[in-house]
Every structure is written in structure tokens, then in C-alpha cells.
Length: 282
Image (cartoon, rainbow, N blue to C red; front, side, top):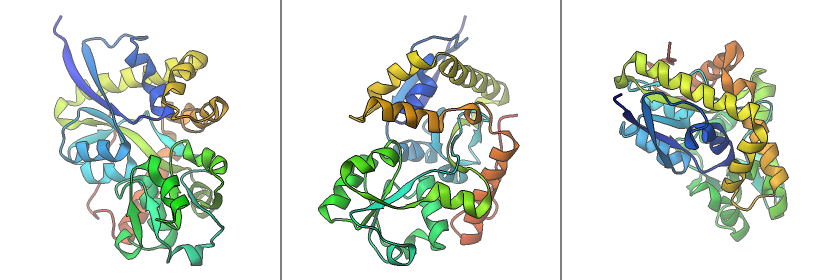
């Protein structure tokens, strides 16, 4: 049997660890594929996809807009905020009119959180005062005064309270109120050049990994906690539940509508190519 090596990228956060646990630890059959994992932050994964240096990867929905000609979006693996999402936090409360002129620490210009931020203010990133830094350094930037406001992703969406910081805005809540839809943040993409048959097979394996984790939650959560970066166990459980659920198994019509709306609004703001088209693995 000829085995094919597939580079698989995901971020070092609990929801991705949970999602890919069954593949990582060979809890399911990976058929004729051998997966070589690369665990790095989401902005690094986005950049690897830009240069087509990874076969199958978690990536920001916003970043997918820039690699759509080389990658297909899988119908499984979505991370969506169901009325919650990336949060704007600070040492003191600022309203929207105040925040727009503040220095805001963001986890990467290609993240969906950054696109959501631009849509929230109705301004392109170049029109805002943004400080780009690793997502796990944003709390430090805000507490030190290097930034006035922080755009928080991953489990920081819950743990900011433990840092003595206050919530200024939840972009997922704002998006739901604005559109009635969940906020699309992350997805899984696979390289088109692998061919549609392989893309389908890989999608099936990833979907089975997600299903296995949901059906064997305690075991998968125990593994995911290793990626907690010191957060409380209960907080990790809550965070994984927020972003890995039935929607993660399949976008569904509402999920796909959310992605379409997110991208169309990005086009209207001029930060997404007008000719960009969303394409899923068939």
C-alpha cells in the first residue's frame, strides 16, 4: 500500500487540538495518508497558505479569501461565534466612538478577528491605529499601556476577566445583532492541486476526527487541556464547546450564508478582492 504524506497545520489552541485529536493519536483510520502535523499560531498558518506550503490547514476565513485560487474550503471544521466572538478589551471601558481612535493590539492583519474589527468600525486596517503582535502577548500590551485596547481571540475571550481587564465590545454579539448570523472565524482548507478525489477523502477523515472527538468528549478534552496555556480547566471545557460543535461537523445553509455575508461585507469595504469566490470541496 502506497502511503501519501499530508502536511496538516493547526493552531496551538484547545479547540483545534480537540478537533484533530483523533488524527493526531490515530484514533481513527487515516487510510492511505500519513499526516505530518505543524502546530503554530493562526497567522503563521495563514502565511503558509499564502505561499501554498501546506496541504491541509486550519486558517482564518479572511485569509481564505486570499488563497481561494489554490485552496478549497472544507464543509467541516468551521469555528463560528454563535452570538459571541473576538472581544475588544481594555483597562477601562471605552465606547465605539472612543475606541476608533485608540491604539488597538491585534493578533494579525489576516485574521478574521481583524476583518470583523474593520467591519465593526467601517474602516480599513490602514485607517485604524493597529499594533500587530502574537495573540498571547495582547494582554501584556494592554496592561503595560503599549496598546489602549486589545482584540482577543482563543481562550482569551474568557480569561480576560482574570487579567483584571474589562469588555468594551464582543464582535460576535455585534455581528449577530447586525446580520442575524453566526460570525465565521476559522475553517479548514485543502490544496486544490491534490485533486478533488483526495480533497474529498481528506475532508472525510477530518470530519470523522471531529465526530470522534464530539462522541468521546472527555478523552479529547483531556488532550486539549494540554494546549490551555495555563487557563483554568473549566474555562477550556467552555471554550471548546463554544467553537467545536454540530456546526463544526457541517456549515449548513446558515453557516455558508454567514461566510458569504462576511466576505461580501469585506468586498464592500474594499478589503476583499471583488472577484474572490467561495468554493467548497464537492
